[in-house]
Length: 338
Image 1 (cartoon, one colour):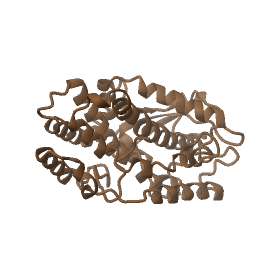
Image 2 (tube, rainbow, N blue to C red):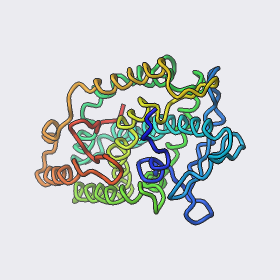
Image 3 (cartoon, rainbow, N blue to C red):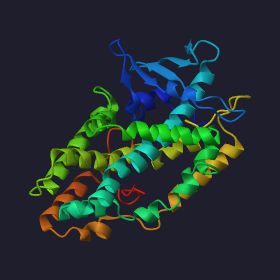
């Protein structure tokens, strides 16, 4: 385990602040993942779930199975380990896999491509050509990475086979039912958090791009919101909750599973799974995506300049959330639909 990892810092000052929700007490926040109690796990593993209460200085308590624990009582370390594992599952399954790769992409891209492609403007077709560039090559390993049985996600998580599929289905249905405005409010997080402070200016920059890019097309306000959410999620959210988080799992700072016997955070089998996942993720992109590869799909010079200016403005802009880049095309998957 990495001794330098600080769960409080991750939740309060880094990308984990996406999860913070206000409580009735001023300055007191919560991260509630207790809904995971309802999913069965395989034998020898602890059940997922937990809720953390914190302020700007410390984690105040962790709740697990109706027990509220503070750092000075027995069971606190066990509950924190289980909460970390649950956080890892939520980062991978909900915030990354389902949000970025399923709900957002299917709602926006496949809805447009499969049901009303002939009614799209040229600018819309170009926009989707950019945001789905190299989609097939990037996502070719999805069944191996995240299939329902025998995949790396199934092996790394503690869910049994049916429960993993149920968890993914229910998570997808939850996100799929959100309206565009509900999605916007959710992805921006709560006011006063490090996440909201960092991503709101970028979200506004994405919205400006969409409005400038489609100027003259007279697209509806509904489409403006949907396309803004789509581009924001497959860039900032995808990076924040994507492959860059693998390091936390490799070092077992936020592991995917906790064993019942001794609550071990690190095992040989677990490390083999995570290292294999990291190698697979790191090598499945057969061609690095750079702006010169796809910019030729934009025919209108004004739209091309609008997109290039946006990329120059945001590509290597390091946010206040650690080393989170908004659009680093040298190592970033902009294409996430499948």
